[in-house]
Length: 412
Ligand SMILES: Cc1cc2nc3c(=O)[nH]c(=O)nc-3n(C[C@H](O)[C@H](O)[C@H](O)COP(=O)(O)OP(=O)(O)OC[C@H]3O[C@@H](n4cnc5c(N)ncnc54)[C@H](O)[C@@H]3O)c2cc1C
Image 1 (cartoon, rainbow, N blue to C red):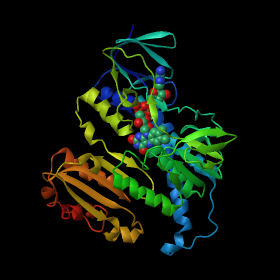
Image 2 (cartoon, protein in one colour):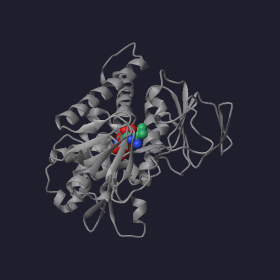
Image 3 (tube, helix red, strand yellow):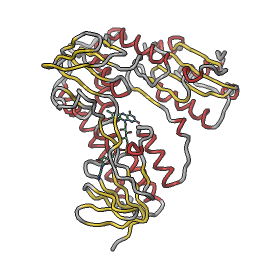
């Protein structure tokens, strides 16, 4: 019977990263995937949402083209084309993955698989022997009592990708990254969008000032939202809110997080990615995979969070509310003070740094290109580069990154 060095269940970012890294080390690898390679990230998560988001932003920019002297007329949305492009992007990336599996001579079994023991995987009635097994089976949309998906009116983040046409109105339950990104997408497309959030702030895991700024942005963009609010009951597609209001949207997206897929935990098996029950982000899954295969350690507390859309939101490390009672310095730079932001007409937002003993302990950015800006701060945080040392770096002009440089001089 053939013996594999590494057997992996799940072909999402955790699984395929582990497979590629192990194969590059010369290991004999087998990977089991019951659905599509790329997992949730490529097929139902990061990539499809960002592709549709991009179309929605392009549409909105085109509508406001005259602000930039661009006179575009007769602008409209062809949502069928939007979803066709989304599918095209997914397929292209998936083909790239398939090719990488082939080139690295990794055996892929397109089937559901089950771990029998720390060295045995069962699939299609066969047992595969592996020296080491990695379980990377991911997560699924969380179901909330009273808001169980019916896949027609009450939709999950998977269902929403299958829409054939845009609704007239939508209620989004939950304002985490998934809820916020979809709220922005629908709002950009001109759909009447309302967000219902149980916590006292929108984007509850963010720094409070970030949440408050996003609430301001939602208001100015015309996204309606309710905080500290739940949906008490649904009758005939009417949502009865805990504050007494009744909403009657065409669709409801329930985006209240994801739960790790259920697996029987077996000693000796490595569990990575969303199934590990830790941080449910693709880049965290990828770092875990490298940790398992290449022993590249990483600091989990330096996992960045990004919410896409205009402006982007990104943060890492401690939030200001985490530092209550501690000594720290803070800088707050408005993006509108940056030349590049004025050039682009992207003046909404701020860069906020938090330091303790001259080391950055938290960064909270609401700005165009925030996803790239946070990376610069991450490198400083990871390697203990002090704010004083960062001042020695030459930042290009005109850029948003100049905002980081300027912020260093405003710490107090
Ligand atoms: C709408 C949405 C947007 C998101 N946006 C972002 C983002 O912008 N950035 C970010 O970092 N993260 C984002 N995420 C989260 C990200 O998608 C996940 O963190 C990431 O996909 C986790 O990777 P994984 O490999 O652990 O699991 P998954 O990607 O879930 O992959 C698991 C794979 O295992 C397979 N599988 C499960 N059980 C079995 C079995 N028994 N046998 C064989 N195969 C099996 C599944 O079919 C699946 O392909 C988003 C998620 C959603 C839903």
